[in-house]
Amino acid sequence: MELKQGDLFWGMDNDFVIKVMDATEKKNVDEGVTLFQAGDVADDFYILIKGRVKLTIGDKGPVVYMAKEPGQVIGWSTLLGREHYSATAICVEASKMLKVGKKSFLENLAKDPQSEALFFKRVAGMLGDRLVSVYPSIA
Image (cartoon, rainbow, N blue to C red):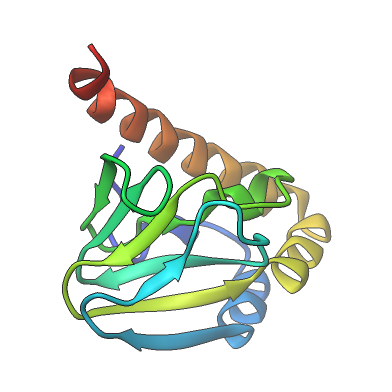
């Protein structure tokens, strides 16, 4: 279930999408910059527009996943009620992304149950794909 950049919010209520986009911050992130470390407070998540972000366990742990497709969510811990990030995210090339604050995003989701269900269905599909992609490294 690889999502293209616009697919994450495709088919959701237009007012909801506008509110979400108004609350995002476009970020240009240089190669080598750490977005967050495992254990940091999970207040934001990111939607990749362009680039590559390496997710590792801890500071120098093995690569768990490489986000490289537009539309991928980075920092999903934020969305699932976790207080802290479970991985470290480092840009391995200059990247563009949207930074989304947890509080306002979850408040907007709660006001639109249909968009909320569709969004979490898509995130679950992405996480399932991510899990399947790491099977070879843990087998």
